[in-house]
Picture 1 (cartoon, helix red, strand yellow):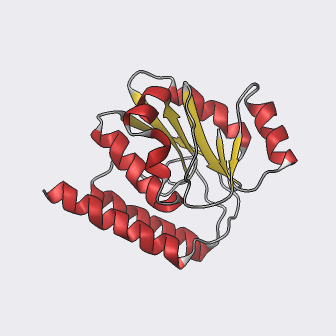
Picture 2 (cartoon, helix red, strand yellow; picture 1 turned 90 degrees about the vertical axis):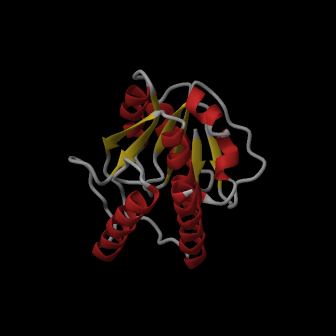
Length: 185
């Protein structure tokens, strides 16, 4: 499991309780260089997510042809604990990204993901994360979709989280523009 945030005994305990035996790697810097992560399933999450939701995502990832499962705030049963302004911004961003990049994912910007081991390796694994978290969320969904893996979404509830920086948003916009050009080519 990749936990996008600072090392925490509370997080370690919660993950151990939710997913006994899971190997947990804390990542608190971007871009994410030098990581080596592999396994039957790779879980990516941050502090806005509840580790007790991981088993539901793993269960969905175990279905045939599923390459990625998104813990979604945007499907029926999902809830976003962010402020109203952030929720509106996230919804608008997700609509634009889905349309421009042609992705069958409601919550493209969710940082709660499970990749099957085979899909993770087929998209280059951690190398897809090298440009930072927000661009990686878009690029990895695009890569999984275009490798013909099924992308599933499981409803989750999130806690309030810190806002993205302007550089995160600018970097994500660059990723969307690049993928849109590829789509048209």
